[in-house]
Amino acid sequence: MDYYVEILRLSRKFYKDYPKSKYPEILTKDARAYACLLIDTKEYTICIPYRTNIPHRNAFHFKNSQRSKNNDSGLDYSKIVITKNNEYVENVPAVIDKDEYNETMIHIERIVNDALEYISTYCNHIKGNKKLHHREFIRKYGCSTLSYFHDELNLN
Image (cartoon, rainbow, N blue to C red; front, side, top):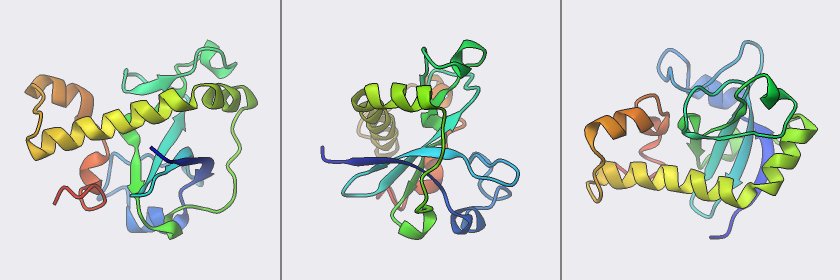
């Protein structure tokens, strides 16, 4: 699959159009947006947020960064944002820790494949192509943001 990656932030317009009151699973921080790994595919852009503490396995967990020594930091697949709107992405690079940037780039192929697999498994379940057991679906997607992006994923 062809893709392009960058580390950016979601725009104010995105957060205005997706308010916390209506989309509670989308991550927000007071006064700033999360830095995200953006994977631009031909169909849509996948935004995976960098997080300091990820309490589940639906993520790429850093092993060698300074922050990962005290926290469970990584890229959280359960909080992925899917967009086709370029206005939802700031065109200014986001700043992340150098060691986390390096670990991201070393494992970029795995991260991209894991994110695509996470999305694909969700889509196949929703379409009825390959249903997960109810408990497995809840464990993996119960707090996921993907239900907000059915239009972008052609699930409606």
